[in-house]
Image 1 (cartoon, rainbow, N blue to C red):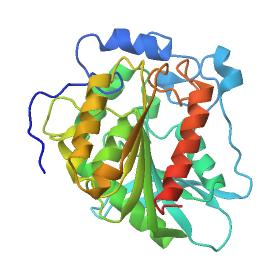
Image 2: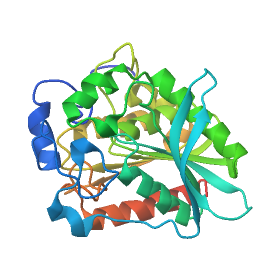
Image 3: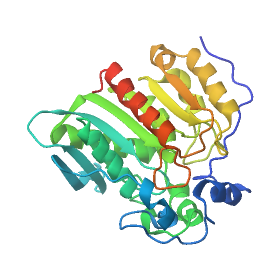
Image 4: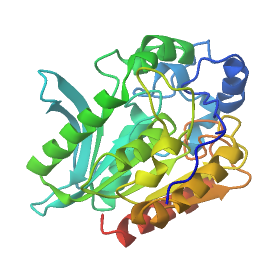
Length: 310
Protein backbone atom coordinates (compact mmCIF):
# COMPACT_ATOMS: atom_id res chain seq x y z
CA UNK A 1 0.00 0.00 0.00
CA UNK A 2 1.32 3.43 -0.86
CA UNK A 3 0.48 6.29 1.42
CA UNK A 4 -0.65 9.46 -0.37
CA UNK A 5 1.89 12.26 -0.48
CA UNK A 6 0.63 15.46 1.06
CA UNK A 7 1.93 18.15 3.38
CA UNK A 8 5.06 17.11 5.21
CA UNK A 9 6.44 18.86 8.26
CA UNK A 10 9.88 20.31 7.64
CA UNK A 11 12.48 19.97 10.35
CA UNK A 12 14.77 22.86 11.00
CA UNK A 13 17.94 21.04 11.93
CA UNK A 14 20.27 23.23 13.99
CA UNK A 15 23.40 21.33 12.99
CA UNK A 16 22.85 21.47 9.24
CA UNK A 17 20.33 24.09 8.21
CA UNK A 18 21.18 27.64 7.25
CA UNK A 19 17.66 29.02 7.65
CA UNK A 20 16.93 32.13 9.75
CA UNK A 21 16.79 31.39 13.44
CA UNK A 22 19.41 28.64 13.42
CA UNK A 23 21.86 30.70 15.51
CA UNK A 24 19.43 31.07 18.40
CA UNK A 25 18.65 27.34 18.32
CA UNK A 26 22.34 26.47 18.36
CA UNK A 27 22.97 28.70 21.33
CA UNK A 28 20.34 26.76 23.24
CA UNK A 29 21.78 23.40 22.24
CA UNK A 30 25.48 24.03 22.80
CA UNK A 31 25.32 26.49 25.67
CA UNK A 32 27.46 29.02 23.82
CA UNK A 33 27.28 31.35 20.85
CA UNK A 34 27.86 29.05 17.85
CA UNK A 35 29.97 31.67 16.07
CA UNK A 36 32.57 31.85 18.83
CA UNK A 37 35.46 29.49 19.31
CA UNK A 38 35.29 27.46 22.50
CA UNK A 39 38.25 26.40 24.61
CA UNK A 40 39.45 22.81 24.35
CA UNK A 41 38.94 20.48 27.29
CA UNK A 42 41.24 17.91 25.68
CA UNK A 43 42.80 17.28 22.32
CA UNK A 44 40.60 15.69 19.72
CA UNK A 45 37.27 17.49 20.10
CA UNK A 46 35.92 19.56 17.23
CA UNK A 47 36.84 23.23 17.59
CA UNK A 48 33.24 24.39 17.15
CA UNK A 49 31.93 22.40 20.12
CA UNK A 50 34.93 21.63 22.29
CA UNK A 51 33.73 20.98 25.86
CA UNK A 52 33.84 23.76 28.40
CA UNK A 53 35.78 23.20 31.61
CA UNK A 54 32.48 22.92 33.50
CA UNK A 55 31.64 19.73 31.57
CA UNK A 56 34.83 17.89 32.56
CA UNK A 57 33.13 15.51 35.00
CA UNK A 58 30.49 14.27 32.58
CA UNK A 59 32.66 13.55 29.52
CA UNK A 60 32.98 9.80 29.03
CA UNK A 61 36.42 8.44 28.17
CA UNK A 62 36.50 4.86 26.96
CA UNK A 63 39.90 3.20 26.96
CA UNK A 64 41.35 1.04 24.20
CA UNK A 65 42.54 -1.79 26.44
CA UNK A 66 42.05 -5.10 24.62
CA UNK A 67 41.20 -3.32 21.38
CA UNK A 68 42.76 -2.61 18.04
CA UNK A 69 41.92 1.05 17.54
CA UNK A 70 43.17 3.87 15.39
CA UNK A 71 43.05 5.67 12.07
CA UNK A 72 42.74 3.78 8.80
CA UNK A 73 42.32 4.73 5.15
CA UNK A 74 39.59 3.29 2.95
CA UNK A 75 39.85 2.98 -0.83
CA UNK A 76 36.64 4.58 -2.06
CA UNK A 77 37.07 3.14 -5.56
CA UNK A 78 37.41 6.52 -7.26
CA UNK A 79 41.02 7.26 -6.38
CA UNK A 80 40.15 8.87 -3.04
CA UNK A 81 41.19 7.29 0.24
CA UNK A 82 38.64 8.08 2.96
CA UNK A 83 40.09 8.56 6.46
CA UNK A 84 38.26 6.63 9.16
CA UNK A 85 38.54 5.61 12.79
CA UNK A 86 38.26 1.89 13.54
CA UNK A 87 38.00 0.04 16.85
CA UNK A 88 37.55 -3.69 17.39
CA UNK A 89 38.42 -6.38 19.95
CA UNK A 90 41.82 -8.02 19.53
CA UNK A 91 41.75 -11.60 18.30
CA UNK A 92 41.08 -13.64 15.19
CA UNK A 93 37.30 -13.94 15.44
CA UNK A 94 35.30 -12.15 12.75
CA UNK A 95 33.40 -9.32 14.40
CA UNK A 96 29.99 -7.92 13.47
CA UNK A 97 30.42 -4.62 11.63
CA UNK A 98 28.78 -1.38 12.68
CA UNK A 99 29.13 1.85 10.74
CA UNK A 100 29.22 4.88 13.03
CA UNK A 101 28.15 8.04 11.21
CA UNK A 102 29.35 11.26 12.77
CA UNK A 103 27.52 14.45 13.65
CA UNK A 104 28.03 17.74 11.84
CA UNK A 105 31.39 18.02 13.63
CA UNK A 106 33.16 15.18 11.84
CA UNK A 107 35.08 12.26 13.34
CA UNK A 108 36.21 13.97 16.52
CA UNK A 109 36.92 12.51 19.96
CA UNK A 110 33.30 11.82 20.89
CA UNK A 111 32.74 9.70 17.77
CA UNK A 112 36.01 7.85 18.30
CA UNK A 113 34.94 7.15 21.88
CA UNK A 114 31.59 5.81 20.64
CA UNK A 115 33.50 3.45 18.33
CA UNK A 116 35.47 2.14 21.32
CA UNK A 117 32.22 1.63 23.25
CA UNK A 118 30.91 -0.55 20.44
CA UNK A 119 34.24 -2.40 20.20
CA UNK A 120 34.05 -3.29 23.89
CA UNK A 121 30.57 -4.67 23.11
CA UNK A 122 32.13 -6.99 20.50
CA UNK A 123 31.81 -5.02 17.27
CA UNK A 124 34.19 -3.84 14.60
CA UNK A 125 33.09 -0.21 14.67
CA UNK A 126 34.19 2.04 11.86
CA UNK A 127 33.52 5.76 11.44
CA UNK A 128 34.47 7.07 8.00
CA UNK A 129 34.92 10.82 7.61
CA UNK A 130 32.05 11.57 5.26
CA UNK A 131 33.25 15.18 4.92
CA UNK A 132 36.87 14.43 4.00
CA UNK A 133 36.53 15.39 0.36
CA UNK A 134 35.11 18.79 1.27
CA UNK A 135 37.27 19.73 4.26
CA UNK A 136 38.10 19.04 7.91
CA UNK A 137 35.04 19.97 9.97
CA UNK A 138 36.89 19.36 13.22
CA UNK A 139 39.19 22.35 12.57
CA UNK A 140 36.49 24.89 11.74
CA UNK A 141 35.65 27.06 14.72
CA UNK A 142 31.97 27.73 14.10
CA UNK A 143 29.01 25.65 13.04
CA UNK A 144 28.16 28.29 10.45
CA UNK A 145 31.53 27.70 8.81
CA UNK A 146 31.04 23.93 8.90
CA UNK A 147 27.71 24.27 7.14
CA UNK A 148 28.87 26.77 4.55
CA UNK A 149 32.24 25.23 3.73
CA UNK A 150 31.55 21.53 4.18
CA UNK A 151 28.04 20.20 4.75
CA UNK A 152 26.35 22.18 1.98
CA UNK A 153 28.73 20.53 -0.50
CA UNK A 154 28.26 16.92 0.62
CA UNK A 155 25.92 14.77 -1.47
CA UNK A 156 23.93 11.78 -0.30
CA UNK A 157 25.27 9.79 -3.25
CA UNK A 158 28.84 10.35 -2.07
CA UNK A 159 28.02 9.48 1.54
CA UNK A 160 26.24 6.24 0.66
CA UNK A 161 29.09 5.22 -1.64
CA UNK A 162 31.72 5.93 1.01
CA UNK A 163 29.77 3.92 3.58
CA UNK A 164 29.64 1.00 1.14
CA UNK A 165 33.41 1.30 0.78
CA UNK A 166 33.77 1.19 4.57
CA UNK A 167 31.75 -2.04 4.64
CA UNK A 168 34.05 -3.59 2.05
CA UNK A 169 37.11 -2.49 4.02
CA UNK A 170 35.72 -3.89 7.26
CA UNK A 171 34.89 -7.21 5.62
CA UNK A 172 38.50 -7.54 4.49
CA UNK A 173 40.00 -6.50 7.85
CA UNK A 174 38.45 -8.71 10.51
CA UNK A 175 34.77 -7.87 10.17
CA UNK A 176 31.82 -10.12 9.40
CA UNK A 177 29.92 -8.03 6.85
CA UNK A 178 27.04 -10.51 6.97
CA UNK A 179 26.27 -9.00 10.38
CA UNK A 180 26.14 -5.39 9.29
CA UNK A 181 24.50 -2.49 11.11
CA UNK A 182 24.68 1.29 11.17
CA UNK A 183 24.20 4.00 13.76
CA UNK A 184 24.55 7.77 13.56
CA UNK A 185 23.99 10.99 15.47
CA UNK A 186 22.13 14.11 14.27
CA UNK A 187 23.57 14.64 10.76
CA UNK A 188 24.52 10.97 10.90
CA UNK A 189 21.11 10.00 12.28
CA UNK A 190 19.49 11.19 9.06
CA UNK A 191 22.06 9.16 7.11
CA UNK A 192 21.04 5.99 8.99
CA UNK A 193 17.51 6.20 7.57
CA UNK A 194 18.86 6.86 4.08
CA UNK A 195 21.36 4.00 4.25
CA UNK A 196 18.68 1.60 5.46
CA UNK A 197 16.81 2.27 2.21
CA UNK A 198 20.01 1.82 0.18
CA UNK A 199 22.01 -1.17 1.46
CA UNK A 200 20.37 -4.59 0.88
CA UNK A 201 22.76 -6.42 3.22
CA UNK A 202 22.05 -4.26 6.24
CA UNK A 203 20.61 -6.07 9.27
CA UNK A 204 19.58 -3.08 11.40
CA UNK A 205 20.07 0.61 12.06
CA UNK A 206 19.83 2.97 15.04
CA UNK A 207 19.23 6.65 14.28
CA UNK A 208 19.91 9.15 17.05
CA UNK A 209 17.89 12.38 16.62
CA UNK A 210 18.43 12.60 12.87
CA UNK A 211 16.24 14.99 10.93
CA UNK A 212 13.43 13.41 8.94
CA UNK A 213 12.54 16.13 6.45
CA UNK A 214 13.95 19.28 4.94
CA UNK A 215 13.98 21.20 1.69
CA UNK A 216 15.21 19.10 -1.23
CA UNK A 217 18.45 20.18 -2.88
CA UNK A 218 20.76 18.89 -5.59
CA UNK A 219 22.96 17.32 -2.89
CA UNK A 220 20.10 15.91 -0.80
CA UNK A 221 17.17 15.34 -3.17
CA UNK A 222 15.27 13.04 -0.80
CA UNK A 223 14.95 12.68 2.95
CA UNK A 224 13.89 9.95 5.41
CA UNK A 225 10.16 10.66 5.05
CA UNK A 226 10.54 10.03 1.32
CA UNK A 227 12.16 6.61 1.75
CA UNK A 228 10.39 5.38 4.90
CA UNK A 229 8.23 2.84 3.10
CA UNK A 230 11.20 1.35 1.25
CA UNK A 231 13.58 0.50 4.10
CA UNK A 232 15.59 -2.69 3.59
CA UNK A 233 16.41 -3.08 7.29
CA UNK A 234 14.53 -2.11 10.46
CA UNK A 235 15.61 1.12 12.12
CA UNK A 236 15.25 2.21 15.74
CA UNK A 237 14.84 5.97 15.95
CA UNK A 238 15.81 7.69 19.22
CA UNK A 239 14.44 11.23 19.61
CA UNK A 240 14.05 13.94 22.22
CA UNK A 241 10.65 15.36 23.01
CA UNK A 242 12.21 18.78 23.62
CA UNK A 243 14.35 18.88 20.48
CA UNK A 244 13.95 22.40 19.12
CA UNK A 245 15.19 21.38 15.69
CA UNK A 246 13.13 18.22 15.03
CA UNK A 247 9.41 18.72 15.33
CA UNK A 248 7.46 15.91 16.96
CA UNK A 249 4.94 16.26 14.11
CA UNK A 250 7.60 14.94 11.73
CA UNK A 251 8.34 12.06 14.12
CA UNK A 252 4.66 11.14 14.12
CA UNK A 253 4.57 11.45 10.35
CA UNK A 254 7.53 9.07 10.13
CA UNK A 255 5.73 6.52 12.28
CA UNK A 256 2.73 6.69 9.95
CA UNK A 257 4.80 6.30 6.82
CA UNK A 258 6.67 3.34 8.30
CA UNK A 259 3.34 1.64 8.99
CA UNK A 260 2.51 1.80 5.26
CA UNK A 261 5.84 0.29 4.18
CA UNK A 262 7.29 -3.16 3.70
CA UNK A 263 8.36 -5.61 6.36
CA UNK A 264 11.51 -3.74 7.36
CA UNK A 265 9.63 -0.47 7.64
CA UNK A 266 6.90 -2.04 9.74
CA UNK A 267 9.50 -3.69 11.97
CA UNK A 268 11.07 -0.29 12.68
CA UNK A 269 10.38 1.63 15.86
CA UNK A 270 10.77 5.15 17.23
CA UNK A 271 11.26 5.94 20.90
CA UNK A 272 10.87 9.50 22.17
CA UNK A 273 12.36 10.67 25.46
CA UNK A 274 9.79 13.31 26.51
CA UNK A 275 12.10 15.65 28.43
CA UNK A 276 15.25 15.18 26.35
CA UNK A 277 16.67 17.92 24.10
CA UNK A 278 18.60 17.47 20.91
CA UNK A 279 21.96 15.64 21.31
CA UNK A 280 20.99 14.07 24.62
CA UNK A 281 23.65 11.36 24.10
CA UNK A 282 26.48 13.86 23.50
CA UNK A 283 28.26 13.71 26.87
CA UNK A 284 30.63 16.54 25.93
CA UNK A 285 27.77 19.06 25.54
CA UNK A 286 25.31 20.73 27.94
CA UNK A 287 22.49 18.84 26.20
CA UNK A 288 23.64 15.52 27.70
CA UNK A 289 21.02 13.65 29.72
CA UNK A 290 22.74 10.69 31.44
CA UNK A 291 19.64 8.62 32.29
CA UNK A 292 18.13 8.93 28.83
CA UNK A 293 21.52 8.34 27.20
CA UNK A 294 22.08 5.12 29.16
CA UNK A 295 18.58 3.85 28.41
CA UNK A 296 19.04 4.64 24.72
CA UNK A 297 22.41 2.84 24.62
CA UNK A 298 20.81 -0.24 26.18
CA UNK A 299 17.98 -0.11 23.63
CA UNK A 300 20.51 0.31 20.82
CA UNK A 301 22.49 -2.82 21.72
CA UNK A 302 19.32 -4.85 22.29
CA UNK A 303 17.98 -3.75 18.89
CA UNK A 304 21.15 -4.86 17.10
CA UNK A 305 21.08 -8.24 18.83
CA UNK A 306 17.39 -8.73 18.11
CA UNK A 307 17.91 -8.25 14.39
CA UNK A 308 20.98 -10.43 13.99
CA UNK A 309 23.55 -7.65 13.77
CA UNK A 310 25.53 -8.61 16.87
